[in-house]
Image: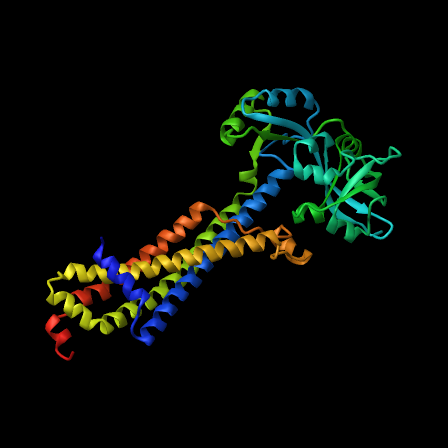
Length: 403
């Protein structure tokens, strides 16, 4: 039996002074609020970073192979070479075009990006499946060339399913190239870049619009567990360094570095709430020491060594920390689940343009919860040292003199 812990638990359960009891409740409540804030803030940053990464990879790929001198003319042999590289799951040619789109409702036109890809890829990529739509191809029932338009871009262009869109792209000749398309799908991926600034067409139609049969990028998806660096190096070697090779990390390095720094700063700033709440634990322990002078004197007179008395109040503060930490984590996790389940944090277009996503999931990871719990318990333990030392130094004669 751990006698100091038993005594500490009795002090917590049955405080004899109403003021000490009230201060104890405030200390626990403050710790709960601090821990809950930490859980929610970490879940916010983790969810945002993870969702942004998921959507970036969902519509693109991990590795990009491109030519710095112009479009790739013989894409078939390059794709076959890349596809046989160990770790590669899929290699697909795509075309990116900067275009001007006009409709009957928007005759002045809007600048945007056009991406041409093989719609068959939608069968293995959920985000591309949303873009292509239920027909699984960029083509109307009458055989007209189709185009997929994001929700926000469709509102800007005044387009809907069945509407006509004219695309104009620059060319090497004097006159630009133009083509008309019919909207086959208005999609919403939750990724603002796609929903507001991109059009998607069949690769063959993009080639006709661009005026060549090649591609300017080959997107490479990896198998599970494959190393991006190893595969990138292997692709360079297999293609004799004829093409530039990049990956999603390098292309978005600055953004994700900023997000990591923001998460660290947020942890430190909100961690100060937990640190400040420990002062309530200190005050609670000091008031408890004063209130329990008689009990401390009786224990000391019965032969209890100073280390035992010190441990009583160390256990007292630690138990308060455990209760506050556990309650804060549970409440925080429940709040995060509710926010994510009902998409309570959603943004209008003008805000989604800044954060790139229309809503943010709050993701709680075991590693984050463990870090929060360890940090809070350590701070709570440190808060018990000074009051417990004061209790251990209490003279039993002085404690019992006025009793």
